[in-house]
Amino acid sequence: MRTILFLVLSASFLFHAGCGKDHNRPADLPKLYPANITVTQEGNLVEEATVTLISKTPSKYNMSSATTNASGVAILRTYGFNGVPAGVYTVTVSKTSVEGAREVTNEYGESVTTGGKLYQYVDHQYTDEASTPFSITVSEKGIKETFEVGVPVRVFLMDIPGL
Image (cartoon, rainbow, N blue to C red; front, side):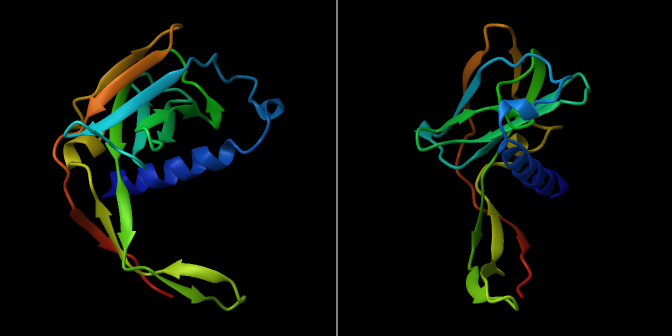
């Protein structure tokens, strides 16, 4: 469960970190190479799955992440910039959804989503860094891979508290 929460928070951070321009690029960020990962489940393209690359060599920029589009393709980003540093990575794939959430107005008059149940739609072996069978090597050529995540599942993860 901690792995899933870590992935959700990491993906959120990476998304928000990418909102700036290249002039915000850290000086020590290594050269990045294109990395496109396609996710399938029983041969079908998977939309809205989170793909995370975790470097097998610890560094400041040891994680890259992206969400698959309607074509099942995740275009990986590192620290909000397109691409991935060269290296060997463990690959995790997760797809979660909140069901039963409701819209309410908070104390500031804003509409917010609250409550519900969080479900995982990819088998646990693919969502966890310790058990995933996926690994890739990114080189100067970049990477374009497809990963099959088996049979669709629907696993309850947690209740999300409401306002």
